[in-house]
Length: 249
Image (cartoon, rainbow, N blue to C red):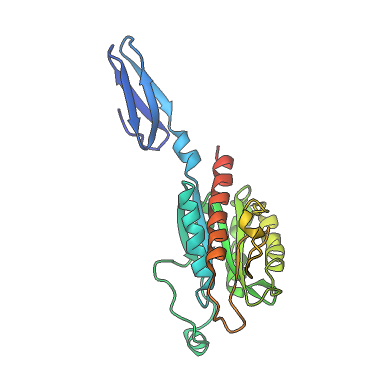
């Protein structure tokens, strides 16, 4: 058996003896008795079921970052290959220090437009500023003019999760106003609807909507994402990954 160079084909040479192969990366292949010959079969199944999902977020006080990590768990649980990155900062270190913003997660590198183009699906993590996306996230999108000209994001599934200070702070409007960015790129918007039954939970105050997962941070940023909010975020990661896998076929 030869492992494929491009991940698409594997060649099997066999003799009259019956051969049965199985590998965690390869589908089961059984060969019955016959004359020695060359068989080639596609390895597309693995790529179909393992879409590359990019989670790109902006988080000043770590709320969206924690949600992004939960979304990532959902992606991995659904068999996707997850990469978590952040939108580049637009504020100076001096301003961030005055705002008492914690240091960025060094494991999450700043995203570039090319990172968006390389992904099979993109999930945006967006903190709300007066009912719309934060400037940092919008700035990243504003740098994708070259991708727009080439149609590099056309047909890619995309979804969003958000963080707001209060219940009426933009859980839905942030998603609605960001959809325009997806539309101009020809991306496929993937809301979670009510597929996640946890959205029906009325036992506690929580973020999230049919548009996507969400958390409340509190006006002073003191509230952390709840267990329920993180579970909805994890569901979103899994859900989008499964949709992306179907579109990759």
